[in-house]
Length: 87
Image 1: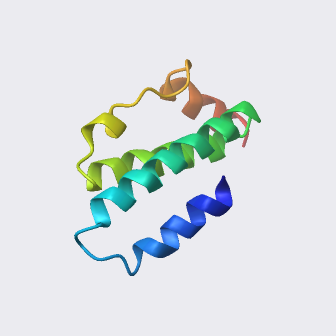
Image 2: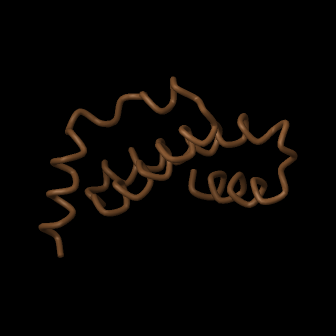
């Protein structure tokens, strides 16, 4: 998953403007899925990072569906609290 996400991130650097929203949407979805994996592994810092990347990419793509896509059952506020307590 991470390799595909990194590949799409590299492609974004040279992506034609006409394809950029679609590639950003793909990057957002891959980032969200990577965040799910990090969350499942109790890597709350990593999950927070990937969820933020997903949200930012969705907003840049103006993809309201992905921007509003639900995150794991636990609210991000609790996720941020867990990440802070790990330090």
